[in-house]
Amino acid sequence: MGLFTKSKKFTGWMSLSIQADGLCAAYITRSPSALPKVEWVAFYPTHSLSNVLQLEKLSKELQAVRYRCTNLLASGEYQMLAVDAPNVPREELKTAIRWRLKDMLDFHVDDATVDVLDIPVEKNAPPRNHTMYAVAARNQLIEQRQTLFSDAKMSLTAIDIPELAQRNISALMETEARGLALLSFDGDGGLLTITFAGELYLARRIDIPLAQLVQSDAAQKTALFERIALELQRSLDHFDRQFHFIPLSKLMLFPVAGAASELQEYLAGNLYVPVEGLQLAAALDITKVAELQQPQAQQRYFKVLGAALRHEETVL
Image 1 (cartoon, rainbow, N blue to C red):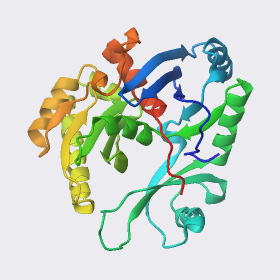
Image 2: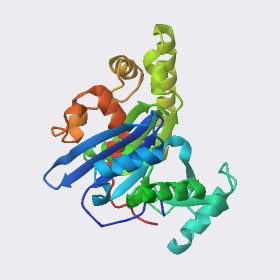
Image 3: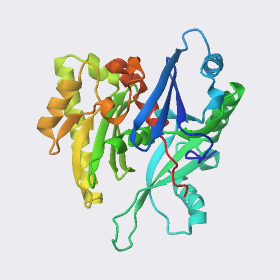
Image 4: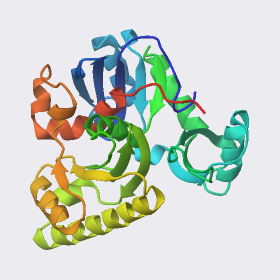
């Protein structure tokens, strides 16, 4: 299974992530004339049940067999690397990318499932070398995940990663002809993405988990804010050098419970781009799901909602 596998089985996607404390799922449908609609979200804690038993329970209660399902990997379950695009025919691209990855992965490339995501270049620009993202996951993990879903009688149609899930939400918030930076935090840390015309151009991790950000005292919080601002400034400067043809409209910060306003205020005073808070209701129709009116629930479901917004990737 490729990481960006195509399918046209049904409309809408059910996405599911296996988290440290349970299984998190969401289902979204799309309409050409309205915001994507969140039909439902669900969380199944794994306090006493294994992931296998809880997934079986989820599958039965949600009648998961009805849906195209995508599994959102956790940050430690794959590697995403920027590589120079090889000058080879399209049909030889993945083989060439594998060769480039052989000394970059923390496991043997022969044990990897690899997919690639192109980073578009400037229109009408002269041909030049450009960068692609390569995503690699261990074959053993992919096989185990397929077996897990198969045993639960769920159709695992695709596998997603958080960078693309966040890209999907960012694309809904873009201003025409301008790029958008989006920063979020969860248990795995911060994730910065920059999108333009619905494409992912940059993804950067910030090694500050959400729990550390919201529980720190005033002095620690200031130090963390300084680290975040420095990482963002470096990333934005890099983006400006690499993609000078894309003007950024702003940086959007997905609400961080207990620290959102302070972090937003700090970044607004220390970055050269406008900083705004992202309101989930501006990107998605969440009126059907009362739970999503709460910031804590939005925090839990943010990435899985993004994965449920997946569209047909360009298979290279």
